[in-house]
Length: 222
Image 1: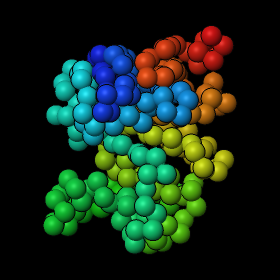
Image 2 (image 1 turned 30 degrees about the vertical axis):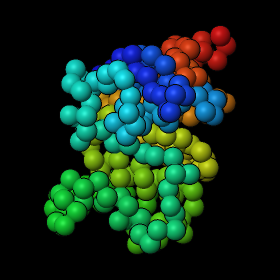
Image 3 (image 1 turned 45 degrees about the vertical axis):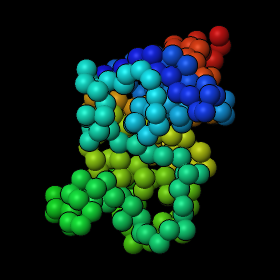
């Protein structure tokens, strides 16, 4: 279970998040929604220890920073330099290389995990293609493959449905359902409300503070 307790973030005196507390059970797919600038991405980054914050973030009762290998993060596509000369396969392998140490070659088992993950998102046939030459949906599938290869218990996905095609959306939702069945915890950040009813088990409405925590129907109609 993921627990966030009284988390606050300040940027040079500006309050980005104020006293946010929430919990997500294993096997849940939760949508973190709110307008642009609400602090959704900041909350994910604070969970990961990427920005200074006050409060606690726990995974299965332990500080998340000590369980970092149990967490996979899929960043916003807009934050990525798509001109960097790297192939789709190399992107999918990044987490494995970090675990092995950047100067060491990932093990055969790690390479097999990446191959299976790329197959799962239907991108193995494009693994040698430069990542910048792929479509938005294909790029998102590669980053999802990177997360899948980690075998993490918790997946944090920042705006994964932005700029993708319907085929990729359907594929991702199918994989999310499989991960839920495996007992994985998924938190998806999104500013899109239109499809929230059929995407998520629960919605967390954020605008610097947590304003609502309920079923999609109740949040959207509240």
